[in-house]
Length: 354
Ligand code: NAD
Ligand code: TYD
Image (cartoon, rainbow, N blue to C red):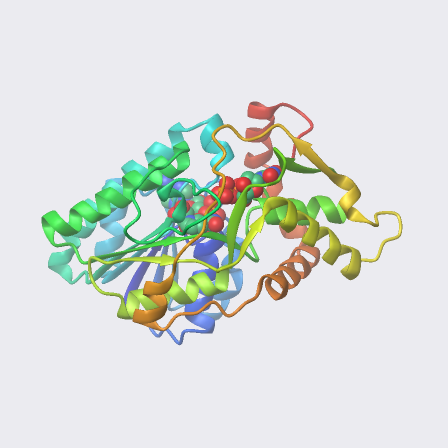
């Protein structure tokens, strides 16, 4: 693996993955970060990497739907491995404005696969597709998603990711493209855009703003610290079997209410501001998300058995670190919440929501 093209490397998981490659994994090759830099992408997330590894880190600002730009990047940088993160990733946005999800997640993945097929002649060895457990739909109170679970996506986001998974699978079966796929549960950690549950609740609870819990807060998510996800992807890239799917999860199921309450309690302890304690007072039950999946839970036995992967962070240790990170990175939060993101929120939800 000498030249790795990472799509969506300016986003939450992609930027953590690139930092992990340079700082933890001992990766000695070049990383080409191919990112359109939407509202969710921020080159600043990797400023330290750009500074410390100027010869081995390149940022290409372009859209994965742009065939010429993709082809040019693969050829110019002699890419031998692709790790595909780029996507529209927020379920609530996919409900309000699904078009970008179809374009980037489905069409963009198709464009990449076509370019990858061409690049095989120049030595492409692996196409890894980063996907989600949401493609499997929703569970009742019992059971787990396995790699054999049928696809039953329920939101425009998960349907677009399911479509992209199917395309990746088809390119392996039809053209022999050397692919791997990972379907992971909910991630949390540094650099997550503060529209997702955990960072949103941290920032609102820290400021004494309302904490909007959808429905009654009974929906269950399985949480995985982003660094554990990055390690899983790195193992799959190195040792995963071609054509295989790996489920990745934290064995850490929580109802949303439990998660929000834990964030409140940790903040009460970490920032003991008498005017805001107890922060649970800010919890508000609000209108439920349409089509809200009840429960996600992953059986990650396959990646544990085959690749020896285990999550190393517990929810409490991971949450503490994540809360501390958001408290220490206020300027980052303010910057990512301004500009394009704010304008989009105002257009779709009106004034007053952020
Ligand atoms: P994110 O929204 O934080 O980042 C997405 C990145 O993709 C951004 O840098 C954005 O600029 C870039 N991008 C968007 N459209 C693009 C386009 N057309 N061309 C090039 N770049 C584009 O997302 P994330 O949370 O880091 O998720 C990364 C991947 O992991 C996604 O494929 C997502 O489906 C998957 N995933 C996420 C989670 C999670 O909990 N966040 C869990 C499982 C799987
Ligand atoms: P989210 O972080 O958007 O991830 P996903 O929808 O991909 O699981 O949401 C996680 C859970 O939290 C989900 O059940 C919806 C819920 N939620 C709230 O209750 N309030 C909120 O403000 C948000 C953003 C999410």
